[in-house]
Amino acid sequence: HNQRAPADEKISLGDIITSVCGVTGRADVMRKALDCIGEMEVVVRRPKTISIDSLAKGSKPWGLQLSRQSRASALLVRSVLDSGAVAEWNEAAPDGARICAGDCIMSVNGASGDVDALHELICSSDRLDLVVLRTSS
Image (tube, rainbow, N blue to C red):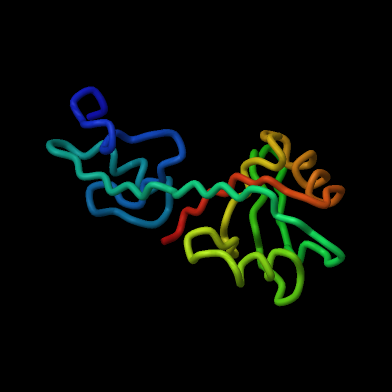
């Protein structure tokens, strides 16, 4: 597929396969559906990357509940609290630039890859430059 497809239709790293030959749900079941004979239909959802520069903490806490898993390369935003620097940012930001539950923080102040280091950077910084991946619409 990728050899013939235009650039914007190629399956890329980070894309999320949501259906294979009409099968949705569990990854192991969709993986078995890849063995279907004949023409294969694969439905892919492409995550959106959001860059946020100079998010300032001020005197408030960040107001984020984060989840980190071993061997993961991103922090999951579990929730944005009603009060805090992120909630203030969200009030002023356009819809597409708000930080939301379910977002994945991929980079903090230029660092990426180690979730423990990303978490520590958030906790110890008064200003954040973030790269966030949004997998939901």
